[in-house]
Image (cartoon, rainbow, N blue to C red):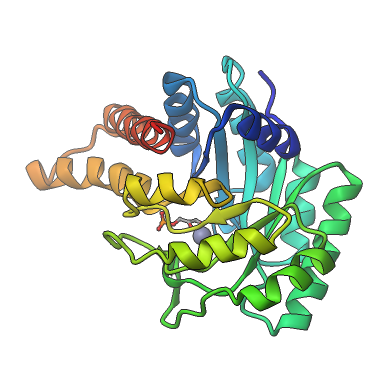
Length: 278
Ligand code: G3H
Ligand code: ZN
């Protein structure tokens, strides 16, 4: 199968009652592992890469690897830009063949956030690609960016924000945290309130560490997409770390890379099955 357009992926998830995981890739191995995990589970989702990671992985190269990784897939998989930090990154990813985009201007004041998000949405919509935006800010560590403060999404701003940005998905801050934080306190009543106001489906970032019960509850309140980064990175790094701990002269990169792909794939499979158990 080809990489699937983000609008079609969301429509497929809604029709079949799925929550879509979006798994962060970093490189070739992680990209194949994520595709393998989704294919083994036979459940849909996204491969995603963050703006920060584009310093390491050119969007054209990631798109090429992702296209190859999903070619045997029988379930829909999209390629998403995560935390798009500039219009240039958005443009580069659309031009490279990404099928879904996030522009993250949540650090800016409200009006500027709207202006920059809308600019990205206009460009993406011209090419038939959906756009995720973020209102509020998450605490924690996303790639190498650390945010100490948390600013929960203000429900009173949601209607204006969604309508003015012309977004297709809304990422919210409701107690979710970036990084390896076990059982973050997700404010389900706030999520419910936001969902009653938002005319677009909701996204939770910081999926690693959120319990399945909370995700199933969030699913009742507009959750369509949940992002996982740290859980997969831990599997990848752990494979090499453990081998080094056992033998400081370990140098079998090929076998360790194959092991790392399998470990990341298993984790992706476990997570996509877990969120869709109910
Ligand atoms: O955008 C990516 C994520 O929100 C990943 O968060 O590392 O806590 O799973 P996580
Ligand atoms: Zn995130």
